[in-house]
Structure formats: C-alpha cells, structure tokens
Amino acid sequence: MCQDEIASNGWTSVRRHAGTLFGDRPSTVEPLPLSITELGFPSSDGVVAKTINYAKATLHPQTFNHSMRVYYFGMAITKQYFPKQAAELNPVTWALTCLLHDLGTAEEFLTATRMSFDIYGGIKALQVLKDFGAPTDQAEAVSEAIIRHEDTGVDGEIAYLGQLIQLATLYDNTGIHPHVKNFGKLLHHTTIAQINEAHPRLKWSKFFSEIIRKEMTIKPWCHSTHVVNFDNEIEANQLMKEWDF
Image 1 (tube, helix red, strand yellow):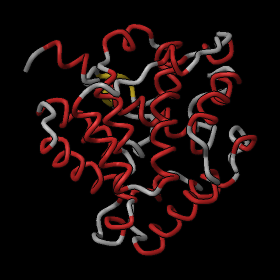
Image 2: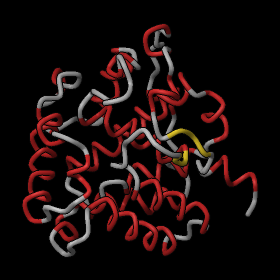
Image 3: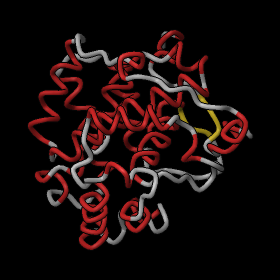
Image 4: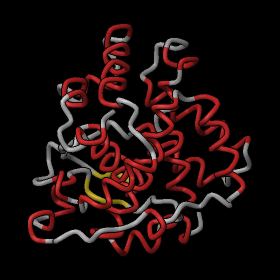
C-alpha cells in the first residue's frame, strides 16, 4: 500500500469522538468568509465528471444539491480547522465521497434491498467508481467513508475521510453535533450563504426527514436509527432555516 495514498485518500486515522479533534477551537477561532471559488471543485477530473452525470441521473434533485453543499461545507471545515489534512487530502476523493454518500436513498435503491441505505450505498459506490476508472484505493476509501457516515460516536478510531463526511453532512442536515460544542458556528455566515445560494436547498429539511422516516418505517433495524432523533433534528434545522425553501 502506497503511504501517499493513506493521506491523499483520507485514510489517516483520527479519533471517532469529533469533540476531541476540535477541542475548544469552535469557541475560540473566528471563522473567515470563504468563497466557493476559494474552496474549489475538481470538475475537470474524468472520474468526477462521470460521477456528477451519474449522480444527477440517479439521485433526487434535492439530494444532488445536498451532496454539493456537503462538499463545500467539508472543504471549508477542513481548511479552517484541520489545515494539515486539507493540504494532504485529494479533492477528487472528497468530491466522489460527497457525490455518492446518499446513493442508497435513490428511488431505485432505497426499497430494492433490506440493507441500510448508507451500507448499501457504500457497496454500490465501490462498484460504480471502479466502473468509472477510479483507482482501487480511492474507490475503497470512498466506500468505507459512505458506509460509516452515520457512524457517529465516541469510542475508537475512524479514517479522516469518514470523520469529515460525518461533520459535513451533519452541518448541512441538522446544524448540530452531539459531541462538538458550538458546531453551528464553525463557518462564517457568508460562507454558508454562498454555498446555499449556489446549490439551493429545495426544502431539504422536510424532504430528507421524510426519507429517513421512510427508511425507518420499512427497515426498523436500519443504521439511521443509531442517530438518535435524527429525523426530527433534520426537520428542525435552525442553522439552515434562512435558506430552506
């Protein structure tokens, strides 16, 4: 295994307890406004281009926009709070993770299997990315991050890519984190506004809370039940309420 791939594909081991990663920085660091241009997006990469087309064709429009917001929120978080990882992480790997992280919620997949959406989605993403020509290590990193993106908790370790997708998805979905104080204040209001304006929410809070409730109804064993009160926290998202139309 190439050591460079460990960092660039986000395999670097970090604590699963997100609060220990941030420490008191959410209370002491004043976030800077970051534009979408500054954050960048690797649209010229061939695998990313194929994945964007696939995601647009497969996901609900609301989910595709959410996936794009997650990309930018994650980039903003890592650049401001984890600059070492930001410098090492391949933006392509991060983009692929974001584009496919909710693949299991697509209409054709959610009711096609008894598996939890995140687990099935991660397995499906691995197949898709290999078909698109992604390197094996990159495809596997994306797959693991997707499988673990609802696996919040305090014990053990997780790959940085998996931790970042948890942080970015919760930032967009609920605006709160069970283990990170002042989570909603991680990013500047201008950054949040630009991202939401570029990729409109399309009433995401209502839409996604209903997706989660649907999964929990038809699959009462699903992994989504691990995130306590997840559906209600999504629907009650105060951080993003300003743009949730």
